[in-house]
Image (cartoon, rainbow, N blue to C red):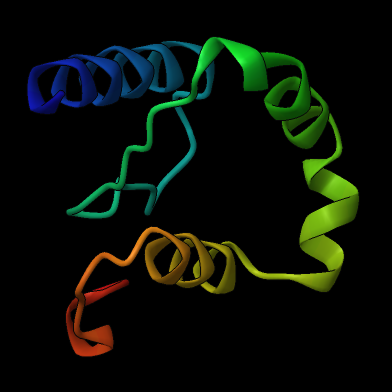
Length: 83
C-alpha cells in the first residue's frame, strides 16, 4: 500500500505542477489511512464518495477517520493524527 500511495502522491504532485505552475504552498500530509471494501459494499461506497461534498459539510475528514478507526477497533493516539 505504501508504494501505491507514494506513486499516487508523486504523480498527482507532478500533474499539479504542470497544470498549475503558479500554485504555491501545496503539499501532501505525511501519513495516510487505507481501508478495504468487500465487493458487496461497492455500490454503498460509490454513493458515499459521490456524496462527500455534502457529507463533509457536516463531518470533517478528521472526524470521519476517527470514526472509522474506532468502528474497526484500531488503536490510535489522536496526538499522532493530522500532523
